[in-house]
Length: 137
Image (cartoon, rainbow, N blue to C red; front, side, top):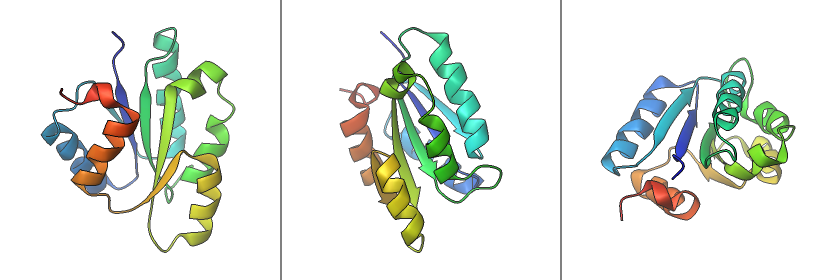
């Protein structure tokens, strides 16, 4: 069986810490990776997808506002990955309510756009829908 992976992409360490705690609380099976910006996230995705053929499922929780490479730039770059990488990957954008224009652009490039902060119930629903094998039966 392939290992499910969740990638938390957010420059805010407390946000990543909260999401990690909730994933532990939900008893998620699989790996949790973290990146503080889109550029670091792209490198982790490349490494993740190269490790196994076909690439194992990957759920990306992506912040829009980050230094180095923001969420919109990340979304543009990840579309250049090979089709097998893109098929393994589901990107959920986490956006502040004030980022209206960026949210609209992200909606065209991501599977779903959620308003920050996410709560544990919303996280569980996302996992159930997009990465159900990661949750205990």
